[in-house]
Amino acid sequence: MRVAALFDIHGNLPALEAVLEDLRAVRVDRVVVGGDLLPGPMARETLTRLLNLSVPVEWIYGNGEVAVLERMTGRESAKVPEPYRPAIAWTAEQVRDHEQLIRAWPMTVRIEIDGPGSVLFCHATPRNEDEIFTRLTPAERLLPVFENVGASVVVCGHTHMQFDRMVGPTRVVNAGSVGMPFGEPGADWLLLGPDVQLRHTNYDLTAAAERIRKTTFPWPEDFAQRYIVGPPSEQETLETYARASI
Image (tube, rainbow, N blue to C red; front, side, top):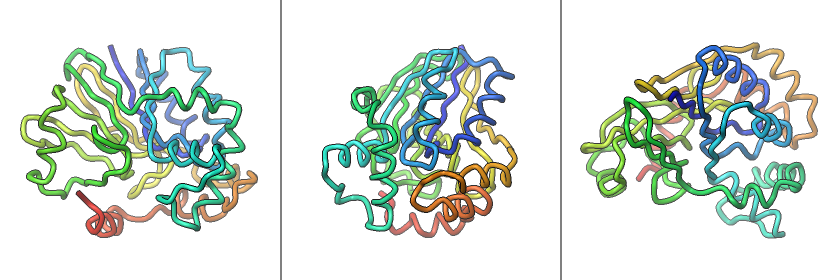
């Protein structure tokens, strides 16, 4: 069995479409959508596209879904900075018809995959959807997080940067971000079975940016420029996350 892990799509439909072309080429048997499908400028269209895939899809929620669901109840999440709240509110209206579906997504999914073995998928860490760690976070800080997961491999996302590292006996792999990668422009994802491959898909960034700019998303130009055409560098992001890491 071959499983594709698609994390942090953030409503970037052009990026998702490009990755799905790659998935057809490698003939995956299952897809795991690893949280933070939301929010984003083409959230409804992206969710619809994934709901209509011809292969089984496993879903988990991320901090983005938690914030959008809270907004659907009429509350603002205290964890969401003020500048991002209009995007959360806009997305909540875009996907309101799917509220019960999204509420049913679990925090983790476990799949047995030939080669890697028992694989646990989570958005940030196995214990919550918010924690931050990177390839530079000291292993001793992470041991309490991963020591009792009961899986040979843990796949996560959240920080939008790929890595593959060991934490004690556990292999921890970050799938990166399909829709908002930090570092090289394009779309990052993960292919599992029979080995574990960090994958990168190039696509037409200019055309994608134009599609994003035509949406009614609260800040389409900023999303197109900062997260598609010219994303922040890995080094810049690592420096930012160092202050918030576990």
